Length: 313
Image (cartoon, rainbow, N blue to C red; front, side):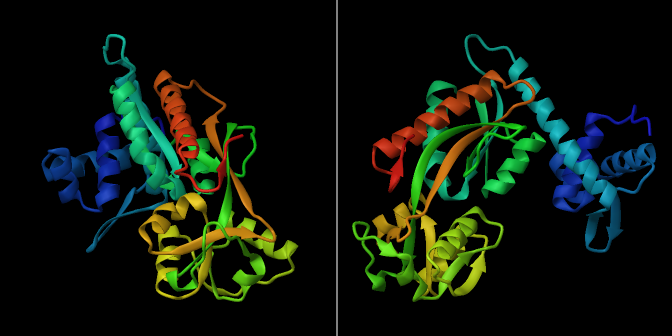
């Protein structure tokens, strides 16, 4: 498999067909005629000697080799876009494409200020924001899909540099009828008297909650388990139980009067949020600027009281 004849147009065709599941739709997005896209896919398959798609009546479905190639092709195209942006002529202006990871619970608080701050200070930087749980973000950093990301409860690893940013307390979250108050902490035993909408196993918050329940010798009854913070809050509002979330994740809900909440106690449960960047490879000036702006926005949110029960290092 020499790979000498694989070109950028073929990789773009591959990724686009994989994303939309249709050669016809991919051709429209790429501003090509359908036979041209079909030829590019077939040329790739002939060059690599493996089928990349299964042609079904419902559309194009990736084979296992196709999925592997698409993952690597996306990274190659992203790196090419980043290089083009960095090399674009600009006088005294940072340019580049920077992929940033935000924890789902912090996105509402940080995304808009981060975009606004970069627009003011570095308008030549194109930002790509991704939200996910910490484990996914860490994997994307390791794989090179992100250049900067928020993570939690993580120390430095062989592949990542980690900088502590903020510690925050977890809160018990309940329907309005429970009348929980931010100035009156709720014990874990009181939480355990209710059905609990639990984060799914493997989620970092679930690990913290399980550890706290074990220390307090207080088993929790899981009404339902979900990997979505939005669903946790929706199910609590609908009366299916209480839940536990970081203060930053429910600040807006408390302000809007859609949920009641109180810091968790006996025991208190804290998580630490850090900034992660790859150890290996060159950190672009644009990525460094984005990291500095993200740190600035985190500090501002804590100092201005917009991040409940949060402490700077």
